[in-house]
Length: 218
Length: 257
Image (cartoon, rainbow over all chains, first blue to last red):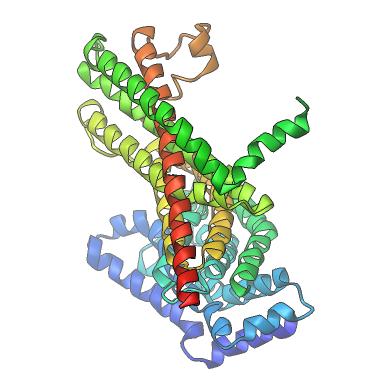
């Protein structure tokens, strides 16, 4: 499992673009928002938590179609399926690798983007906390979507159509934590709900991902 | 009759031939009774009920809005059950029924959304509000679209049936999650359940209840929509079975030639 994780991470780093691309995309989205809604700092401050969450979600989505497709094309996935490692573990590791390469950088970089959008000072901690708790769910759900569409020639658009509705609960609670945090309100309930969703997806969804992957490999 | 034979009575329709033969016999009854219920219910509702004292005649859109919204949700439930049956017992008719039901569900969702918007414009002063109920219906609409798109995208019918079934199961969990998340996210304008609530029907609970004057034709419309839905699903499932047969015949012909 560790070998597989290291392999995926190495591939993402050396293939060029995999590692930093999500981050650059996040930066571009953050830069474009003031152009679209105007540079008034109080307006930006009020929408900053939502925009940052949406940016993180889209950056996460961007890299999903490559998540399993490369291994599918060169046959690695067939080998992994016949390996002693259960397929559930394989998809979990894939999701973990995806989170380390896209989710984790976003979490770490989010405060910088928060400055760009004039996020109120108490919001920084809660923005980072909500992203840290919520982005693993994005990766796990995304892996399910990638497993569903892995056999398709042009799965990219379909993947977004399938995955984005599944992101709704995470987005709602994640953005709610960040918004409440920025306004100095109590954040316990949405944060717990967010954590619950993340843990439940991590616990259950790999089984669904592995099941659809088996169907696709048949 | 023992439970075992009763259970067998349903499973015999997993045979496409038996299914087609039976549905062809019962379909006319469903079409006709749906037409009668809808015609009587809608005419009664539109022309022979009084205008509401606050909402005027706009209240009458409930005869389309409530039944279609009800069927939009029940259609997804039906797809969930048939998907489960496909995953567990591998009956093709079941998978095809789920496929056949999805577009009907989309149309029902769309009818509910559009009639709601038409009603909302004069009543709430807006076509659309990010109200929990409205938002969850929009999300349900997106789930339907994704489900149908996945069916269309995959060529091999068995793979498509498997993948969409799993998507339906996972989607159901997330749809319910979204429903509660959306509730948490915004308080709504839409009234609560006021038709099918047990207390409201028996008359013990009179807080926010649809008056009997409106309720009888509404009930008829709901029954009409249920019958219409059953007829459409049976009809479309039959079409899917025949399309599958044509495919098989063409494939056999090509292999033979």
